Length: 422
Image (tube, rainbow, N blue to C red; front, side, top):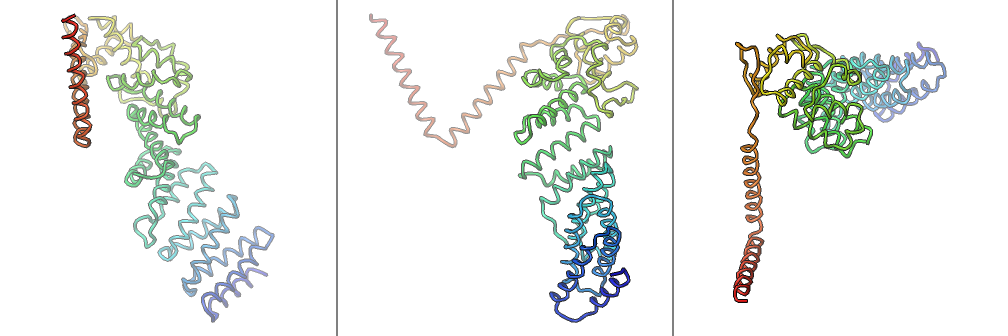
């Protein structure tokens, strides 16, 4: 049957009498005949005519919606080839004037078209196709899981093509939905959030997110190790300070980290050893393109992080040092060493002060005893808090414990008296 004949047949069906079911059955019979055509070009042309006819306002929505759902299913069965892609684009274009009536079918076709575009590595186009689904403005009420899954998919696609701001928008939307969701969604949300922070240069926060992911039981061992590697890299690139030192200590104590190619750098950072530029070649190869970018002062993220680390290491070795000596130690000009030390002192990431007259920096060594006392005090307060909560919920436990302590005390006194008598 020619295209003209199909067009005439479908036009007659649109104006035919009968119940919606009878009309739908007649349309499905035509659809089956079109799908049976062996020539791809003729079958594609027949489907286009069928789609145009079904979407026409002359056809009742009771009839057209199920038929268009059938078309969406058939497009998925056709795979991810060029014919299926062409028909998806054609259908979405024809649906636009009546989108409010076919939102469910539109979203199904968009998901399939996104699959095709993603397979072609056209991530931005795939993300755009999905982002045009009217999640909140249409008549169709999408489930929380569907919205969350699609938001995270869009975020991942935008991340893959480097559109960080757009990715962050959909990560934030997902954040409002992901609480108490399936582990699959929680993992994907954490991963997308970590990648956004990573791309934006917020390496400390990204490292913490990646480290959390590395312990998630829902990930494979390989994925956990990948997350751990990312945590180590981001922690290395983060600005030096107490927060990073604590995370480096956590990573260093993780037995899995010893199997990573970047463990040598982690070990030196944790132990406050000076790191030479010549030792960074292997580590530099692990960096992603965005991690090799430059900061506002023209330094790379890695160079800046290593200089700050070496400065902290120097503060543990020296009470004071001239800027000329410090520059030689850090392998940078003396003026830059002074500027770096001044900035870290101002940001309270380095204890000390600048002596402009002598051209040196004086390092302050922290008194650890008050810190220990403070931590012991905090621990005792936490223990007291736990006991108070247990007592409030189980008062009988305290009475038993008190009675047991009293008996032990009396026995101890008796033992002492008997010992004195003997």
